[in-house]
Image (cartoon, rainbow, N blue to C red; front, top):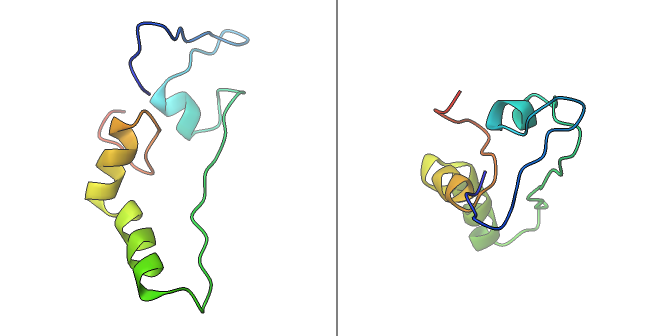
Length: 74
């Protein structure tokens, strides 16, 4: 979750937004993002989708302030 001096994280119903609360659907206000490809997707699109789920891609996801698929911060 991105650190920002302007954004304040708010607890809802006593649940503080944290990586674990978001990952395990405990925090009630979240959005999910998907990468969708088809069987006719270009090789480049498939490589990009694979990269996003790689450890390097997930580090970028986390650095951008999103909750990655897996995290060392538990």
